[in-house]
Image (cartoon, rainbow, N blue to C red; front, side, top):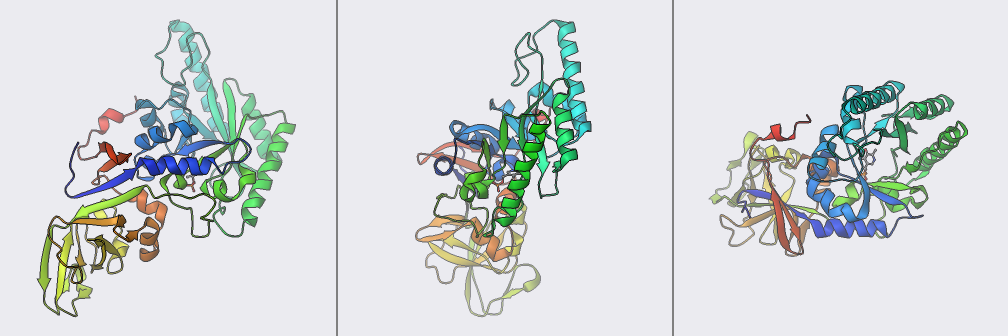
Length: 417
Ligand SMILES: *Cc1c(COP(=O)(O)O)cnc(C)c1O
């Protein structure tokens, strides 16, 4: 197992499992979970997280075809949904690999239908089994495109318009040859707010849209609406499936979301080591721009992580880290690869002392939410932005079960053929 001596993110897979169980216990009406692992599992590592949550999910959701393919290439064999728009030019790959796109225009749907026809023609001509990729179908069975219709009930991002015309379009898409409408979904814009009225309005629009499409002869097996906020607080919207994202990673969607019903445990902690300790006299400036000037004799420790690793620069002069169980305030600007902290009041700090940037040390804890609050940032963004210079160390039952780093560029291994 590799030892990382500069910085690493510890990913607690027991906390992931705990969070899945906590959510599952809160689901209503037999709803099943879709695990959202976009942006490399919100920066935690999509593949290890997907593996850890496999017993609890019916499938996965990602943002891009490459993210879907990466999961498949790592042996993840449950259905994978792409939540955003996929270019019609990628239809053949979607069909070949059985990746479920979010569909909301006739152009997209036709391209998928055409890809199905083309693939089936080729299979008939070749009279051979195509290699058993997930979703490619069994030998002798025709290929189909499994799609999820996206409905715009208030995000104004993607989705069919939520009216009679949209419903007619949905029904027409459902009739295209080779298309199987497996799911139909919408997304809440404001489910994480105390006032649930806007979310409830979206839910009611969605329900009416489903009635309209059913009246036009389209029935869809899987309805899914709820994100983490709705999993926690809007049980009435769980229906067939829910899409769990941020809650897998042990964070609440916002400060307004109830924290007692579903108890979440943080998954990521971020660690480094002191590289250098020195004493500076009163009046000495620290870091770029001299925005910090010591007003007393100060003991300064240097920490080898910076905004180049995704540690937010907006914590300059505001944030703190934990060393020897105590808070050490950040002095001056966070640089690209390093920053300095004040350890005057922490006795005995030496080079190689562990530094906790996110997580617990003794009785102290720094959460991602605290970093977001302190720096004026957003907690989802902070974890997504933890960069490629930060190796991930996976822990289960207090044991390191795997490590993953991005130190060498080997992207050619992952190009979709
Ligand atoms: C990202 C995303 C989710 C997950 O949202 P969380 O707030 O992280 O639970 C669910 N659905 C869609 C469409 C998304 O884009």
